[in-house]
Image 1 (cartoon, helix red, strand yellow):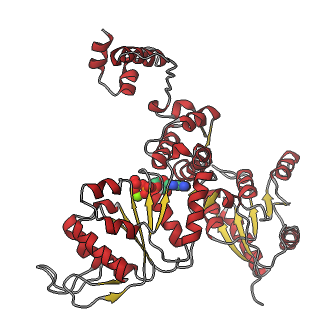
Image 2 (image 1 turned 90 degrees about the vertical axis):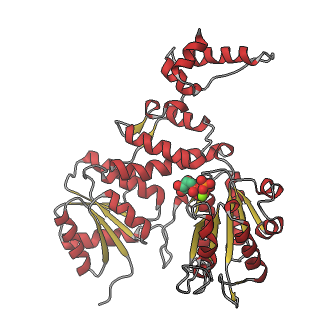
Image 3 (image 1 turned 180 degrees about the vertical axis):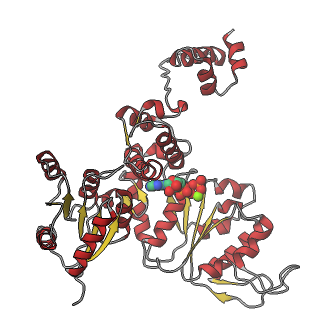
Length: 442
Ligand SMILES: Nc1ncnc2c1ncn2[C@@H]1O[C@H](COP(=O)(O)OP(=O)(O)OP(=O)(O)O)[C@@H](O)[C@H]1O
Ligand SMILES: [Mg+2]
């Protein structure tokens, strides 16, 4: 007898039940995965194609109801079978409402399990032979990139155009906007995904080493070069090299890079012969290369080689509509990581996040959510859990012009008013020390 093609995931906090169900299923020729908590179950759901979920309801920390809700949202085609020791009517109604298809009361026989499993499979929504689960977040994300705004769509449309060719791509955007994630998406969403992806932060490697690290060297090329060595370019061959902070590359590195792009071949430092390269080059920067060109620290001819395809990653403040989706992702990720729970956020707190300016973009948002989860004393993030600097918004509706001094006075008074005359908070917002604030008040 060979195993049936379906994969079943069993979730229960009781290892004996897990073992028992798995043994029964094995006897029925089903392959199954076991998870002792909802957290583990979700990890398996993400990594594996599951065709049926069998779950307990009462579990410590995150319970089965929440798992069913999660699965209904993210894998709507996945059938669910509830196994419980508490067959109260109240529970049954809740289970039906939450979208479970069938219900098995402990203790049960192998025969009863067999029937319930068969029934669940027969009620499956999709009838395709290969039941790939529908992922609801598909429309709201592109690989790892979360968002459904038209600004992000523009980015993903370009990714779609370039992911299957090896055109040189240049990614520009403020710090923390997701440039590296875009580079990874180009590589991993396309047909070269199995080839290497090598990310090099040009700002993190000392200038004197960058050239040899990138291009490799032959023995004797310089003092200390006692073997032949490959660089990042050779390592990334057939795949993608991602050169982050390209504005930091020295003129020597730029000259070599230009040759690589022109000739599609590479010469190790000290070598006579070049070797052919088949590589996609992606570069990124948050600085303005045109300014660096004017200052003569970046080669103009290289700039034009690098910018065959340009992607502008928009700052978060220009795609506010993505904020709730991103917050959701971070709540989910860090909630399970730090608190073993699904953490929520109040409307008021979310509104504060939506109106902030986000100088540090998604990285800053991620940090704020992370901190708030740690600080929150319930499973919902409230306004009080957010850092102070996010909370104050001062409206300036004056239309007449006034001197800087007058405005400074007015502004300080407004900040004091907004903070309820709390001088420490006001000083923090104004980014001056308390002593200076006191002097100004006088
Ligand atoms: N669209 C997105 N969806 C989900 N997470 C994102 C998205 N964009 C960025 N992030 C997350 O935000 C953080 C910053 O992203 P990334 O490192 O790609 O930014 P960057 O533009 O390269 O920043 P820097 O200029 O500082 O190097 C990462 O943790 C990343 O996972
Ligand atoms: Mg980066």
